[in-house]
Length: 365
Ligand code: 13P
Ligand code: 13P
Ligand code: MG
Ligand code: MG
Image (cartoon, rainbow, N blue to C red; front, side, top):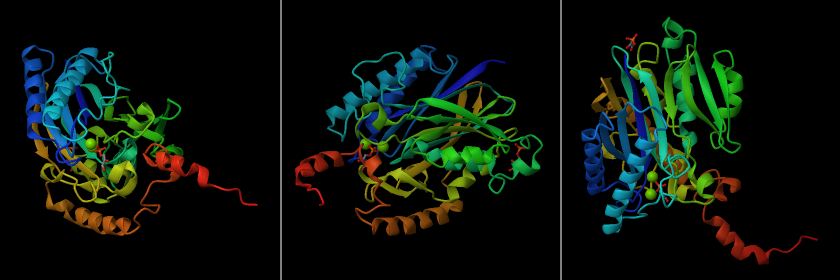
């Protein structure tokens, strides 16, 4: 059976209005480019969408992960969309394209990437999560819940296919190193690290037999650029059913709006709100942070779908709770823990203000 690769590559190449959404003409430009790539037999199928101001390219192909051809296609698509954004004077045109020219792989160049290669099962349901106004570690808590928490995922207890647990690949994005943890055996060791999502990120989850279950984007824009240029706004792919959690088990963690970094100027904490695509337009204080989930069945590489998975009244209470939490956080104004701690603020525009005040400090005798 042929292997198929599912690639989700995203970038903010210009916002409409401000940082709140992607203008239709950018989506159309990206669709034209990817349609041409299907005709050229470079990719099998695609779906273009947006979460907030981030343009999302969902593609299937036979080239494997980290394919220079696929990454070039994504990069050139983002460049073309940036030209459209510049023409319309959209906000922050080309924001996430941190390099002048493509150099073989979009990793480290600004766009976020999540890719996995697998042999299609008789039925292959996948769920693609996309977030705006947040940072790459935002998937740590939900991935933990999906694959390691029996209070979330009943299958860990009652399904023979999942009872052995999973293997987590964790990246330390500051030291550029990785470690693997087996669950449930090493649950507590895993939590030592992934509870600090600014530095340690769940890159991937595998079954104990080594089958890929989930993969996330871990690109941190601030670490690439060395300064604040916008938030990472990460993506995550999760395979579902059979040896993996059921669709509802994969979605369940988002009923608890956990607190993530990335709201307003990338400098504030706020709750992550699960929304349908038509509500993925963060406007209140440029937020609160949003997550959408598109479901597909993959058939011979064809992306059958999408289904807009959070377009379900079952998530209404999570959204309501989110607004209550958002109100409470907002009342803290410029105070922590709404504002990020000082070491994270180093990657914002605050250091320039501090620089101006540097001479005002006097020694305390
Ligand atoms: P499987 O069909 O993947 O075993 O999952 C059962 C299910 O859908 C429970 O919600
Ligand atoms: P993005 O990272 O989504 O571009 O948002 C930036 C911002 O400043 C929002 O207030
Ligand atoms: Mg933006
Ligand atoms: Mg964004």
